[in-house]
Length: 342
Ligand code: ASP
Image (cartoon, rainbow, N blue to C red):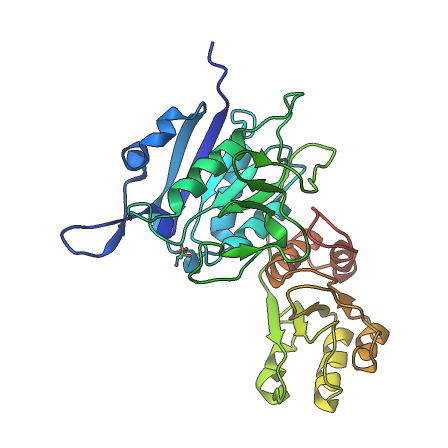
């Protein structure tokens, strides 16, 4: 009887799956069925791998909620067959996808590990081999009682495992491309993999919800922001919710035009969520005069949400509440899967 853990590796695209085409000299996606040819070390892992490649691998800039749905459905349909899942994904939007899947797959009790690389797997100095091999080990890892070590959606990159919905891409060139600024890593890989971080597990069965609503606007503040340029966004028929990326602990200028637009938008049923541009720390509405307007007028605090988690949580809340803003706000005020410190 085969007792090796079973891991499903889903290849969506991105740099990791590229090799140099000797004919053209440019990088092209390799046939993922040939993965053992490129990483023979995989054959030495005590893990039984099944691979599934998207028919047309994408650069992750092309990512959208339809692709998230496809990934989540693959995990859901293989949930009882596999011990864990690895999703190979371009690093550019990996933090959005990992956040999205954490909301789509609630009640998860098995690992879903995103990874990718800065250099293609077919190049000599690639970071892709280590990332993939360790991501598979983590996806297969069990504790002394036989329970999966990780029971959530996470990102493994350059020796660190992060909670997916706490993570941002911070470097376009360093191998250490990701950070989880407000939560320490779930695990660190050295000679051994140290699972020392806070882990997340829920009670209840796995539930799949993929009906995201992307009618979300995101405005990043900067000194001199001209509200006439943004005025058309404040229309619930276009954007059911707006996320404001404000300064510091949630502060914004007390601009008359901005306040008018905001109040009218709120009156017509729009939802507004306040997150900070800072990568560490949190929104504290009312701490300064410049954020007390938000506090008094029902703007929701995003506390320490990353913008990736805020956008995907908003899409989830709008979809789940099916047009009921009261319900959507209730969802936004809770921690759904460890994405926020309340
Ligand atoms: N542009 C690539 C992508 O995100 C970069 C990468 O894979 O790291 O698909």
